[in-house]
Structures are given as C-alpha cells and as structure tokens.
Image (cartoon, rainbow, N blue to C red; front, side):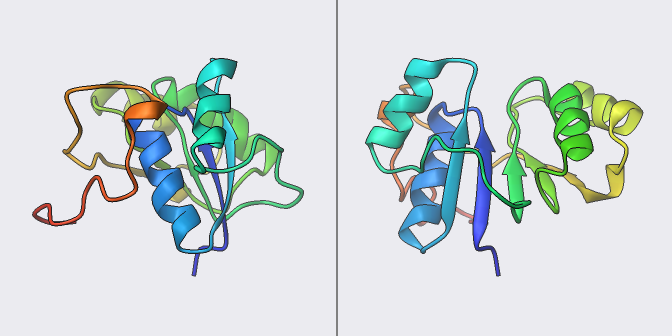
Length: 133
C-alpha cells in the first residue's frame, strides 16, 4: 500500500494524481521548478511542499524524466518511479541510459486530460469512469 508519494511536476496530471492520492490518505509531497504551480497545487489540496523525511513509495516525474529519475534514484527519493509524460521514447531512453536502477522505473500515461492545463484545472476524479482506469 502506498503511504507516501512525491510528485515532481504539478501540472494538470501531477496535481490530479496528488488530489486523488491525498483523498485516499496518502501523504503527498510536491515539487516543481515552477514554484507558483507547486503552491497552487498545494493550495487546492494536492499535497505539501515539504521534502519527505524518508524515501517515498512512489515518485511521479514530468518531462525531464530520464534526468530526474536518475537524480532522484541517486538521492534515494523513492522505492519506485512512475512517469506520466505524454511522450515515451525520450523518457524511457533517458531513464534506461542514466538511472542507476531502471528496474524501479515504470513509464506510462493515463491517456486522459482536459481542455485546460495546470494545477487549477485538476480534479481528483479526472479519470473516474474512464476506460481502463
């Protein structure tokens, strides 16, 4: 069972994941190079901005997946890593080439979204009722 999670990238999908996880009692830690986006995600209840004290159960990196997975694996951020980037070839190649533990990396995408982007467009039920979700 996932108890803690780090989300790296608080756009629409990252914030959605945080909202859905937080509603299920998961302690969610948010990180983004866009500080305003991270603050907005925290303000809507997707998690907190503090760095986790212990390795988390799952991290969700955004667009610079290979580099971020490699850095976060070296730091021991998580037990497993999942990306929700909309493209796959680059992230998978980058993680395979640079990450010290590629076996703990899972690439995927929820194949859903909205006509708007960013943390304020996210909803915890974004994938409710979607095929395969």
